[in-house]
Image 1 (cartoon, rainbow, N blue to C red):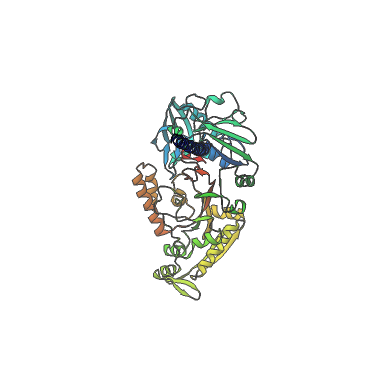
Image 2 (cartoon, one colour; image 1 turned 90 degrees about the horizontal axis):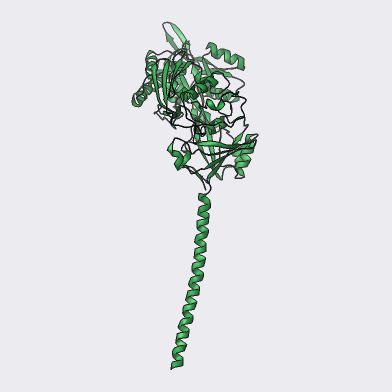
Length: 528
């Protein structure tokens, strides 16, 4: 009986040892798994760098560089007096106040507590120094200060800028990067070998022929820096854009911006994300509003209804541009119409002409007034060296023929084209501009506009908006301009270019690029 008792005790003890062993093994394996998961998570968290690519690099100094992507990235390092938001509003940056005191003068105040990346204070003298460099005409930003006649330092935090003539929305010209005066004291600015410094979110830590490294600027005045997940930025330098495409496919670059319409031929269609945005190149059909036929608003409207913009963007540009309805439809906050329709309606085009008294006889539209008969025969001028615009002209000719309007295409050399454009010696002409960031539309509606278009109400509005600060009132004024444009159609908006930000799928964060800047909300970005 006693032996059985010890036997049972031994069995229980053995079972306990087995249970403990199993538990120990499980715990160890589970703990190892957790440690591995934590290690992976830690590895993800510790990837606090991002890799960019630049081709045809010239200089990291924003007042010297002519490289568009360098200037884009430079906005992370160097800052302007005034910034531009995602919807093209003006926003204070280094300036704390910008007051228009007369048609040609501005008082700008800055905060001397904002620091350069070497710890020195930002002052009004730095603004004067930068404008002086821009006035030398060697920078892409020279245009911004073209009308600046004088710069007066009132004190260390206040400066007065005087213009040679009034510039509508001049605040948008104050978006050039500021560089420090004392840093370049006593040396040739353009020959300096110093690594340039700014006041921005990141600073240059090293630079050589192949790479530029940026790191967070701990002295940045904007507290967004505290939340930034990206500690360092590596900018890889390539000789040509094709090398960027290859490096991206190999996983060595996280993000780049391009306007290449055939991008998929280089990087394929999978394994990345893309964000498209409306670019600055705006193309339109200008009508000579003093022409005997085109001075008739109804004829211009009939032409507008006849042209299928969507067909143009799809067949000629393979959908690598956007249909455009107005010069400000690139995302400007003052364009609130957001009309997604191309306005195409060939039957409506014929009705507009019929309602205006035109009759279709002998294969042409004609109209008799005061014993005089007018017939609609039009010429369209295009630069023969621009293949895309020639194709657009042929498309328009075909479209107008379908409603009975005959168009002769006048294909001319670049020199002839420029002369015709300057002298406004045309009936219709295919042309375009690069939109400025400013909402100023005087180019299209103001005095000496390309279309010889005159409208007293629009002239009054253009004069008013230059001095209006209230956003709602500005929108009201611009809505009126849009209404007049749609009613009178002095030109026909056609299409605008498209740009694309390409990013790897392991790059997370809010991506909302526009023409001005590709890296809004950069502090939210992270690489997994």
